Image (cartoon, rainbow, N blue to C red):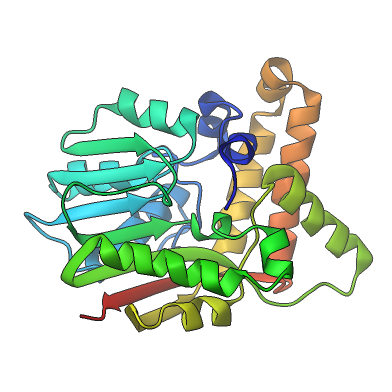
Length: 282
């Protein structure tokens, strides 16, 4: 798994920096552009998809694994009226941001999923954009990733009640670039922006759910992530002067290159995005 120091490289740059080019709620994951071209609405569409897909409603107790800056927690609490929500993150900056939001009904812990133990079982779990941090590139090359993924699904199973649902979103690897330039740009994004992380293959996720979770629904959203990354890049560029002044030219150019690589990788089909709804096997 990515270490806390590696997570800091990815997410602790500055909360104010990310706020300049993410949506208002600071979703740092693929939006769902169904019936809209607006990023703000598309991100709400994504959050609504997981709310509905995990059969949430009044009185449901929910765990958000890798909860980011709290966008999903805030949506579930303020928009959907849920009152018993827990988020876990390994990012110190994200943890502080959620505490500052003071979202009613939300408890957050800065902790690894490997160390987490809930006080009570949950009715549902949601994890958006965290799965890529579970296995390291070295573990994947050594063939250890499937066992690590299965252990993750076992842990989430152990934290939930019979009848629970689990909503999962992850970037997935599809094709390896044969173009050396494309390969170099994707490698830069992987090792510079997200050290310790790797995009899993879809089949690796699917086979690792057994015997804990039934795969109920699988949707791939490659074009949606291409569109999300392109909007992030547009917003980043619109704040170029401020970013250069506050965080330096190297930071701007690093993220401009990273986001451009994301647009390219999804446009050419090197990477895709999966949304899954899983039902607990009791």
